[in-house]
Image 1 (cartoon, rainbow, N blue to C red):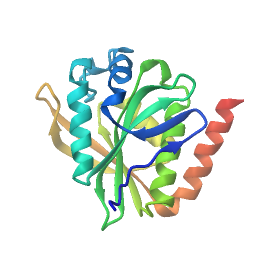
Image 2: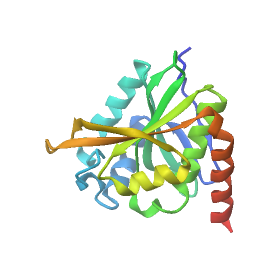
Image 3: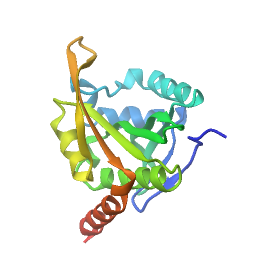
Length: 198
């Protein structure tokens, strides 16, 4: 069995389930909310490219390097975004959480906190990871702040790491949470979720 075996992760507000073409229509609608695909420093698929992006992620799962999820809002039963375990290294016991995006209407609602809590708990407690990594463009200040609020530490910046869709060069901030930090990070995320509910 693959190290990244398909799994459904249940939270109070969301469910993370393996991505499939059945999520296409919800995700195409979600990406229109906030016109996310037009933000130049992200790589959110456009509605017309959604089917191809779902297929690309599924193919990477079949090769063992990725486990993509649809983020399901339990109050509606619909998908409101995507997130992914990627760049999986079962030998080094490391994985990256990335390629994450959410419809604008659920941003800043605690949904991301719960999503990351589910993914980190599974990574550290089921996959026995020694580290979980996060990467984002230096320009993406919203994403950087969200990663830092999780308790991740900046490992460094990969300069001229890759190109954006428009051809400009991207510097990438690399963050991580290591296994020894997980108990404190888990307590902090749990506290934030409890506070958001009251």
